[in-house]
Image 1 (tube, rainbow, N blue to C red):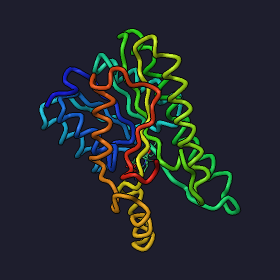
Image 2: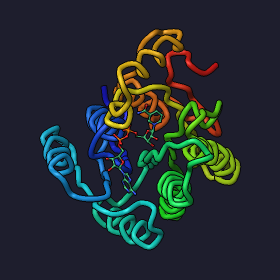
Image 3: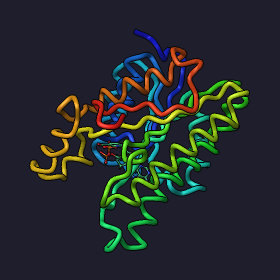
Length: 248
Ligand code: NAI
């Protein structure tokens, strides 16, 4: 299939996990892929190589998406290299879990800055080129805990809920200009982020999920293909849950 043929997709935090699956799925659908991560490691270099071997144009950019200046200058470089950015996927994210009683200011600031400020930085940077193109799709990877909350994740839940409010506001601001903005709320997805949890905790999550299993990064990437492609041309300001029914 070629659902994204002719489009350039920019994905933050794509060297591993969900972002990596999104990058590969978009390439499979014919998109050119610009991806970012905070530093160049083996996974970063190998992704760039794997994507280029798929016959599309692909390039990685190393910078901290929570840094405003770095985000603006990097997006300028990406535009110079790819000419357009049709789809932005704000995927970079971190956790610093702790009950509020023990949560430090650093844990709060780190999560809000990486998860939420990066979305402002990157969306602001792509706004002008998307306005010029008269089209665009912005996809923010939120979480079910941004909708339902989770003990021990007040910082993370607040950042993910913030992404939803941001998405709806941008959908209202830019809808008339044919720029769409939606959020995806994944549930329990099996990546490095969730691999740190004990088997016991994982099993307890699975028990609470109607589909009785965790999701795969590819299952989240499929929703990104829908929102990035013209299949979703009349969908904006929505939160699509990819969670096996965990949040209804
Ligand atoms: P991960 O930890 O495997 O990957 C996150 C990537 O973001 C890493 O490559 C990391 O280097 C990069 N990154 C971190 N800080 C960055 C920064 N400042 N600038 C640029 N890149 C940065 O995480 P995973 O599981 O793939 O999660 C991806 C997104 O999906 C995150 O936003 C996460 O909150 C969200 N999510 C994940 C769920 C899960 O169960 N794994 C569930 C719901 C949402």
